[in-house]
Image (cartoon, rainbow, N blue to C red; front, side, top):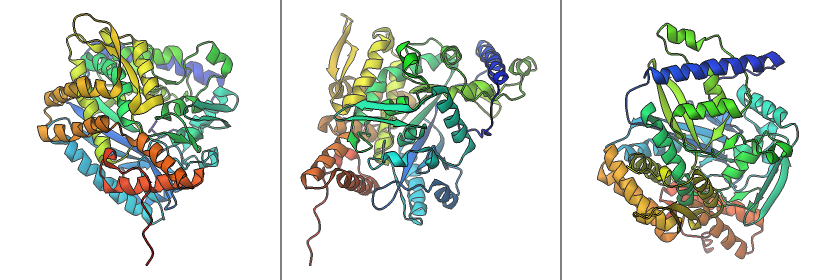
Length: 505
């Protein structure tokens, strides 16, 4: 969805023409895979982080256009709403001290952006959902002034045909409606990219799906929305409901939502792109002039623009990506599971855990997805979103007896998955100093049963106990979060509660 899309109207023939073009693109992808035209292994990873603009009072600031003008860097770009930005870190080869390098680049970029935002009395906050967001902040008039967001909103609203209903039942319950997709903008995430060869794609994607729940359990950071305490990671239900093109009748029929965990393990990247065409109508039926099969016949590399655009409107938590670099096509797994924040150290720790774990799991002789039903992976994801670090998960039983067992997420991570992640990072060639530092952050979160969501919830309740109103407690929690985020110390070390006021005199 990062490509420039020009707003316009679509007539009845556009969708049929687009569907035909999508089929030609899918045939082109099938040929590219059969002819082994993809890039050789490069062990490349990439990172994107969505950010919030927040005032000194802890409230959102609708200033992304002005802030981006001052930042004046192609590494930063708009996101869905005016209080959002996104930072992109250039691809890096996995190995050596890559995680320390990433951390340094991120700290430098974010500190610069924070200074520029400060010139407009705002600051950068990395947090899954900003606790101080109000329903009045998430309306179509606060969408970024970019054609593709306007057009996407119009098409999703038209497909839905009625107001969107948000209904999330957690610690408390939130029910409300929206006339636009603007509530989606509350969800700010980290996207982890991994370039893989076609032969490895299915194993890596399956591994990423298998551990999505574990990622959420240790990394949850979104317990609040519109003043309510909901799930420990409220982004997934919010994202699904705020982009749901299905009226209630289609939901009852079992029509798949566009924000989707999936329903099966796969054997090829082709499976996912084919599902996109089979299950999801086009939202943006924009055709270009390329004939992908003719380009292939002439020895060229097709852009498959329609396939790429359509894929960008199906919101999988692990998404396939087709792209071209230096004239050579490649595939990536884009992991979209994690919330932003709390600190750079936490973000990099989450990344190290993920990259190590998927490498190890993808290379196991008896892969986890051959020993666990896909439904169990989906249920683990749901349980982790609801309960965060306190979630219980289903996982294959160790030993020769087979079957699955229910286990605490923290026990699973400490006893089984951290050693696997260590093995995976060693296989990538990551130096022990990097590996031990960042996996140690995950271990400490598990030992203390503490992550961003647990800190936010505990600090909010402490603030209420001091006599603050709910709104004041959320604002104070957000301000304190921003202060601690800027220290850079990982979230498991943060003291719970608000600082004592300094004595007068």
